[in-house]
Image (cartoon, rainbow, N blue to C red; front, top):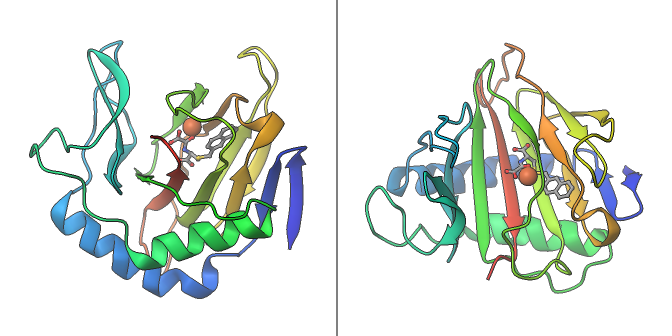
Length: 203
Ligand code: MD3
Ligand code: FE
């Protein structure tokens, strides 16, 4: 089922559910090479969300700022390759939203445990804002905050559940967004965690 969240934001409820086992197998391979870790923001705070990356570029933050980097700062090695099941899912979801031939070069994997959250922010470290962003939610449900072009615009609340996919593009690409603190719950495949895969064309 397709639901428009804005002129360029399409929610595909349950789109990833059929492929969840393949996606989670791909995630295990990524985590063996690049485990979840808590990064430090430029302001000096430890993120409550733990993260890792796969693909040729990964999103990283430290005291010097936010950026995309080909290397994992923990090891100095390249990020793991994007699993085939990840690429397929991102490409198929983008195509359903009208973006043909979406080939992401970066997949940020966020891990939320109870209490973890993402404060309102914009994604603007990418080179090309014309490419969409595809976001895949797995595990424990969360409340997504979808704001406006100003931080002060009151966000709407969108519940996101296991298998939900959102494709963001065009006029909604620079909207503020965040995730409310995760409520404790259990998911039969993922236990206490929520995982979000965010596919981007970053380079
Ligand atoms: C709306 N992650 O890592 S991506 C992030 O659930 C991030 O972990 C969210 O925001 C999460 O930066 C979901 C959803 C997303 C991404 C880009 C957007 C929503 C967006 C750009 C514009 C508007
Ligand atoms: Fe974001």
